Image (cartoon, rainbow, N blue to C red; front, side):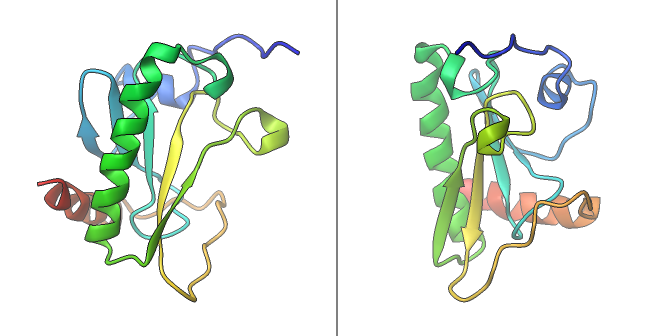
Length: 142
């Protein structure tokens, strides 16, 4: 089964084009990391490639080493910045698997023993809180 074509007007494509603001914590030639506006835990960060791909299934294999390297870098920083017991990494492919934004991305979510994740609801986090959490991650990145 073939996936639908990449939509150049998805929210992450618009963020990459500078059409929608975001709270970024990291950027390099190939990837960006930004705060999830509906975090499941304080510090919930998204890592995405700059190259267009709907999800992992159609991604350019050459982009993947850069992407997973950034995921690891952000995971280490998130765990440190939020004194987390662990880090949950999630990535979804197609609606049946839970994908709702059709640009390849990884969720990096700090986890604390005994504390449940909040639902990924339609309620957006306050921008000041996102900026403060981003600052913690940027500091941890050194």
